[in-house]
Amino acid sequence: MTIQTSRLASVAATSLAATAVSGAAVTGWAVFGERRRFRVRHERLAVLAPGATDLRILQISDLHTVPGQEAKKRFVHGLAELEPDLVLDTGDNLSHPQALPYLLEILEPLLKLPGLYVPGSNCYFAPMLKNPARYLWKSSTSDEDRTQAQLLPWRQMHRAFDEAGWVGVINRADRVKVGEHVIDVSGVDDPHLGYDRHPGFLAPDQPGSGRGRFTDPGTAPSSLRLGLTHAPYLRAINRFADDGADLVVAGHTHGGQVCLPGGRALVSNCDLEPERCKGVTSQGGVPIQISAGLGESRFAPVRLFCPPEAVLMTLTARA
Image (cartoon, rainbow, N blue to C red):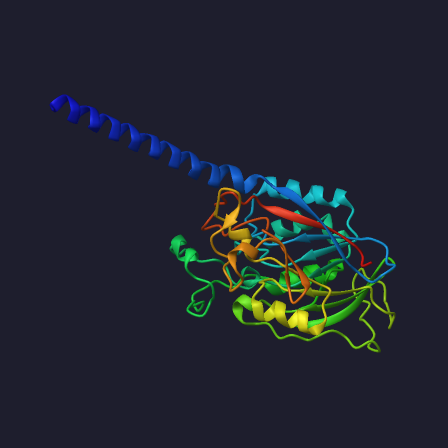
């Protein structure tokens, strides 16, 4: 009996040790491996007006920049080699109050290209240390208190984007021309903060602004109606669909960030179903492209079964 009990104790101890080693390995991979496994996801979407030539759009999102992220900088610099026609930045660019100069270093090659941007909450407010498990049951910001949150240099960041030739569509609509393509764009401020106010799209006889690196399109007919938002809350994507968008592009969700094997997300951090929180989904018949993002809060620097990504969309003409 004593020998049997001893053997059982030994088996139990071995099992616990194996579990601990396995858990440590998973944690180590989530912290030091997965979050640096940057990739480019390619999508091909038939959303342009019939007869239009292809349009290549690069989406970057959720950089959550902290000074010194050299691997991230090398990856983003390499994205310029994809030679996109247009860059979309869907917010949450910062994760540290002193990160703006480093963010601009990261984005330097892309800021030379035509670009559109909308902000996220971590463009306005620095992340705060909190219980990371809270992420698993929260889907909104209704009970978040940001009175103690540190403001980020969002005005300076937007000014730098504007001076580089990118155009902010923050609760505003515009019409821009990229090559031979005229794009009607409608963008909103961050729905996660409740800042979104939908402007709709410009009327056909309203001219675009012709700002930044874009050619003035005048009142030429558009080949694409594009909706931009940081967070893909249902009210936001439904409104874009109702307004006649051909494509909606969003970020925010981190693709679930900590997922089950195979990439199944447990949460979306908004009211969109977790299984729809990355990749291409649809709402009201409109394609919704959601990026898993390139970073994470500096207080939750983990990813599991959900590598960081940029997205290159090749838009083609509808049949």
